[in-house]
Length: 174
Image (cartoon, rainbow, N blue to C red; front, side, top):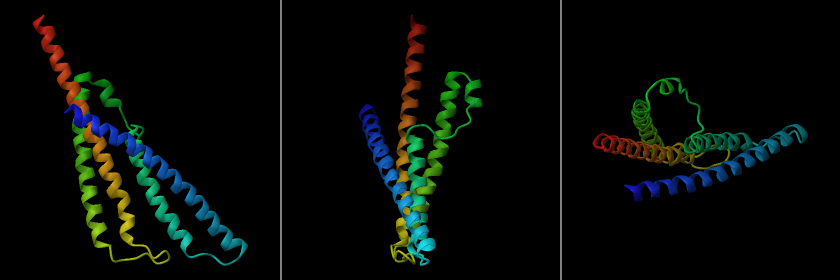
């Protein structure tokens, strides 16, 4: 289990670095694209048709990349009032159960994105003429990545729980 956990940790770390870099690149491209669209529309009075479509496409990717990185760095919004009121052991159990619910949601999202990815392969965007399926790669890849993060977290929680049980049984024996 240790090697699986270490492998997952390495994948998560490398994945976060890749997603941050890709997200920064997409953000820079959005700024360039939107600026180009504004200049073409208001300065030259001849708007480009592709700028809005590319901007929306990039925003979709930025949103999913950002969500995945926030999950990996544990920086997403959370209300932790209940776990603070519980005992540490109960809080760990609650976190484990919540992670299972999140994993179920992510599996549904991955499955839906995969179905849409396959169903839209022969449809192309109007202005950019790119396959519409590329839009669904964002929730698909980010969903898989986030699922790996939550699997890793649950492995950590299982390890924490088994360590607590071992320490509890040792203290009872002494």
